[in-house]
Amino acid sequence: MRISYSSATLYQGCKRKFWLKKKKVEIDFDASADTTALRIGKCFHQILEDCNHKREIMKSHIIKQAWEDNEIESDTHKGLTLAMAQKYLDLHERQGLKVIGCEMEIGDENVIGYIDAIMADKDGRWFIVDLKTA
Figure 1 (tube, one colour):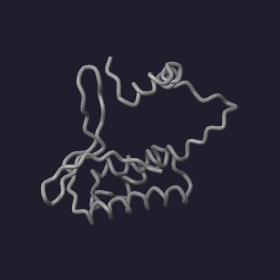
Figure 2: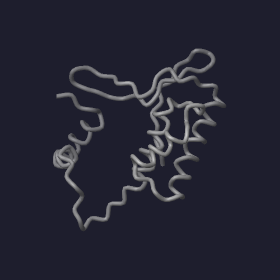
Figure 3: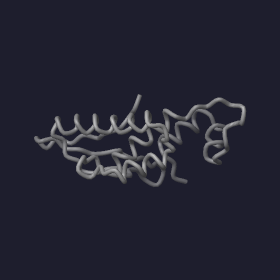
Figure 4: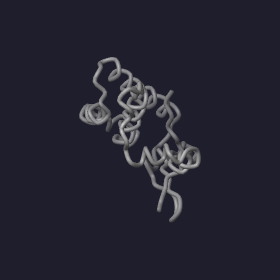
């Protein structure tokens, strides 16, 4: 069985949580779990992935699809995800980074992982990028 690092960590931390997540068990009806922040982060990640971290590819249909896929409905949250992506691309461009690869799978027969992006600067140095939102 191949398992991602995050899944392995979840399993090591709590086998029951791992099982529930993998079985896609719904959250208890009386739980108050707001997934807004998670959906915003996933949306931001999807926009960058789908445009390969390039502003010229980040078109409205890509953004709208990410909103739909991640159930981003309020204008405030739509504006936030768009602003996050634009700020990220501003920084990316100021640093002169070039995307070498996006969402690359790494691992072997026992472990699998994904790299959000690999980038190179003007001096040829490479960087592994792991996107996080807060």
